[in-house]
Amino acid sequence: LTAALFAAALFELPALLAGARAAAARGEGRETRTQAAARGEERGAQALTSARGEGRGTTAQASGPRGLLPAFLFAGFAVLAVPVVRNTALLPPAALLLLAPLWSAAAAEAGASPRRASLSRRGVPALAVAAFVLCCLLRLAGWLAPGTYRAPGWTGLGVDERSVPIAAAEFVAARPARGKIVNDFQSGGALLRRLYPARRVFIAGNTSCYPASFLETYRREVMGGDGDPADLTARYDADVVVLAHAAMETPKLAARLARSPAWRLAHLDAAAAVFVRAADGDAPLDLDAAAGRLTAEARVSEPWPAWLGGRRSPFPALNAGLFLRAAGRPDLALRLGEKLWSEAPDVETATFCAGAAEEAGRLPEAVEKLEWARRERPADDAVRTWLARALFARAAARLAEPAAAGPDLERCLALSPGEPGAQLLLALVRAAEGRADEARRLAAEAWPRAPAPLRDFARRDPRLAPVLPR
Image (cartoon, rainbow, N blue to C red; front, side):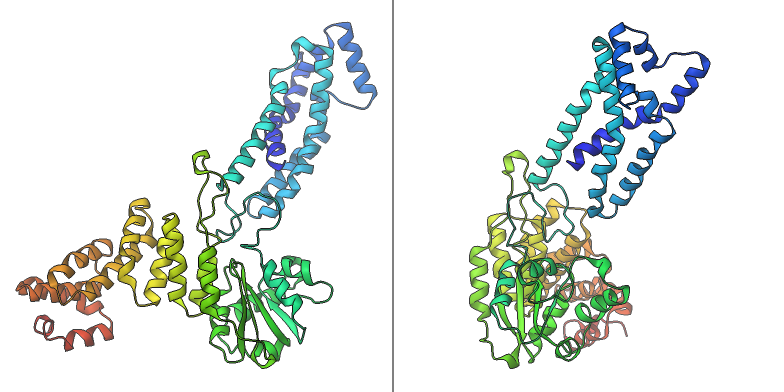
């Protein structure tokens, strides 16, 4: 509806802003469209007189000084809607304020002289319907960006429990309350929907209710800090923490809670995790079993068939993998990523698997996925960087076979020119191949930029030490 009214209002703006020109034309003796219609058939004059009697103006009249106010309101609300998507709710009433007098005047003109009814006026409803249908198709196909890529905003019926923490809210509701809830910004609405008024939440989407100092504390200390999570109980009397996987700010707190002996993971589903105080005696969650269930249930999202232009996305299923990585289990996260990759290769899945593989000490396994991602997005710097790191890791694992390690190091340097680690390892390979001059050149280029641990490694390696700078 917003898209349709917005399109129609944009279409009508020129007619509204033409009021000044119409007034000038009257002053010069030229006829306006309204005057021409009034000069027509007697029936037309009667219709226009009736319209004026009912308080409706013509197009030219609606374009006077008072008629410009809806245009200014519409333009102002459109500016507000550009940076904040929720402000698009302001557009329909502003568009209607602008459109109602214009369409009323157009209807009067059409009644006065049906044969002279403007084609553009008749086309406005069709344009509005076309914009509305196009908006719906784009939303259904997944081409309209949501507020966060982790929670695709597809149109559908009901609540998407893969990204909204409905199950986590039920778990909290069934558990005896021994303190207060700490939650992330994104999960507050779902928790209030289920728990209020029996329990309140730490934060929710109604940001205007919170002072700026509280929002800063939430970002910097609660979610983004590195303090002891036991302070959550001392400071906020918290007995439960709910973290939505789709929220961008939760991984640091999830990592701290997973390492803390004061907290225990009690619930995990595709949308959220729930931590409880260890002292409360809740049964510990079998993380391997829970992650296994999530992996078995994980599916690539396809809200609209691909042959109709739909976009397939690994999210929100991949969000649980992000939590598993934050919780210190990259091996479980990698299994979930591999499952989604087997269903539909995707650039985001490739880089996710690379991150999980690196944390699990298996980065060389990600080379094939990253090479595919590089072909799909050759200009993506994140993919280029990940591929260079994976090639370096695979070459480091193959140093016993210099002939196998050399090509990977050459490609790594092509992707990340001047990388000191790749230069030193390639110098080692060249020295093993008997190409001492090239090995010395590479070592000399890399040495000033090499970090201390890399220099120590180079000095200890008997194949590399002879070609290092003195």
